[in-house]
Amino acid sequence: MDDEQLADLHRFLAEYHRRLAKESILDVVQQYHSDLAQRLADEAALIPRRTAIAQRLREGEQRLKKDDEE
Image (spheres, rainbow, N blue to C red):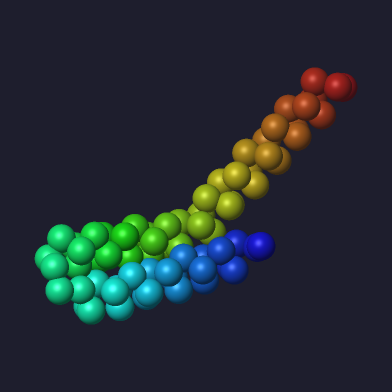
């Protein structure tokens, strides 16, 4: 699964939980689904950024390893 698919999955789940929140009768259940939807949406937005950071870290480690070998 690539980053775009993972972000799409998070967005889908966020929408699903927003729908559940709207349909909920109890305030505590509504708040739970609303909070979860927000966390999933926030996570979807962060996935590309985290991937870029991880890639830069891997590249930096590879450069250090290469420098140590020389």
